[in-house]
Image 1 (cartoon, rainbow, N blue to C red):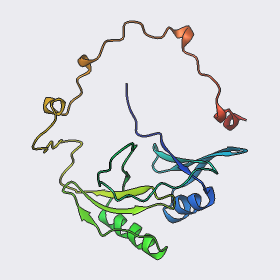
Image 2: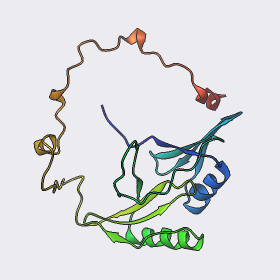
Image 3: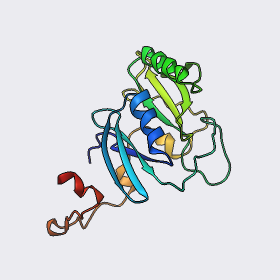
Image 4: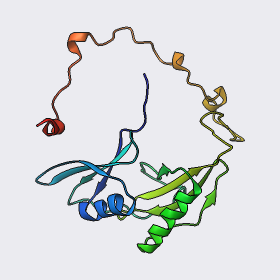
Length: 189
């Protein structure tokens, strides 16, 4: 397997207009695809050459309750926040200035050792972080596992251990490698 990035994160909104205005117009992410029919929309915004964020518009959905980034919660929960990488601290300050000019709350720049970050929320209360790498510390090249009390599996190190899982003994035969049509067939029209 070769992963190339995140194709898209799929989020939800009750108002696609305010979502487009925020992600496309304020943050500068191109709107690259849209699908829709009665009671359903699905729009995609380009983050990088390989990564997108998408939104379903469901009229009956309610915005999530605002929750501070990284603060523990109890009960059912799905994810904490999304972090988008930018090239430099200058990009962080540009985003911070734009957010403040548009009257969105945004944090100060925070030093996390290997990244500098700012935090905010989109109009759907989705918690967002923007992170700039620290030039002399690349944890992708040189992992830094600093948990003082790591779980047992983390003590095995940063590299994958595929031998822990069963080997594929019956791969899908060529004649069964079928792709079924979905909503996106419209893009080929």
